[in-house]
Image (cartoon, rainbow, N blue to C red; front, side, top):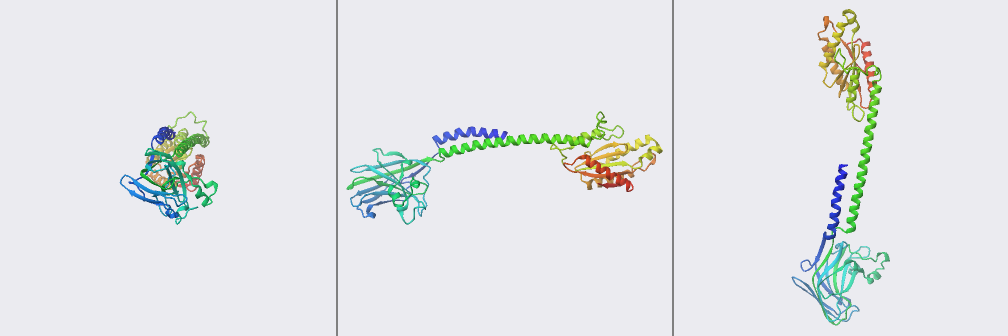
Length: 426
């Protein structure tokens, strides 16, 4: 939720900032002038068997075309050409909105100017035929002022080009995504006059990011942020429900594993007063802490069931006080031999349970063999020789601990049946 809140805050700042910037700034300018001529030439209607004559006078601040417009060709013309590409590769002008001219026109009759932008399209155009390119054109009266602006969207595909290439109606739109040349031409004015067109600059202006595209991006960002927030909220709810269900399963598993004699142990302390080992209530608490928050043990745990061999003989021969002392020393010997994280539980009488977290069976067996040797060298009351039998198994993640205890108990009985004073594995 913190991530979503941060994203919403960022979008709240970016949205008005980008909209204002797009409106008042973010302007892209492409200039054609003596400083950026892009390869300039003049041509006239003599290529069409006409008689008009055009000439170019370049200067540091202007490109001037002089035109002696003469009758001869049906549509006499002179034109100034700026070449923007070659071999069918031009420039993309589709993102420009307006054209600003710094241009002077002089002539005896009429002030008509034609603007052509030729667009190379593989569907219709070939490199060897200049006139096969789409002619996007507009004719307008040159104003008296030298600087003026026209919108780009006034350009239309020339009718003669549509007819010559049999262009279907749905493709007669203007297209400016691969412009190879820009032409400034004389318009429909009477021949027999001298015309001068002086171009100081032609500037194409547009936005680096169009308003439509910016709005699309912003709407997409807001929708994405909303979807992200919804997804994270659902994941959070799902995680909370999973954790709750896992805790309920955990409680059920622990209660099932310890339901044997659980009612009798409800009011007892956690520690056996004789040996200092945990009692069954203490075991319950240990298991609750040892289980992972997801409802299962974190890692493998060794479970050891053990008891003293021939303990009844000790009680019968030396009395219960001696038996109690043997139990105390036995519990002390075990605690001295195991880790602080290992938990010893007095299960009942001379039976003990040992839980060794993060321990596999081979590690547990190695530890128990050392313990068995230590018991043999222990100082016992009345010079007794005390041994113990061990049954060991492993509690796997997601396993019911009650099942592991039963396996360990079965291994303990096997150890007794096989001669006592030994370790058996379930």
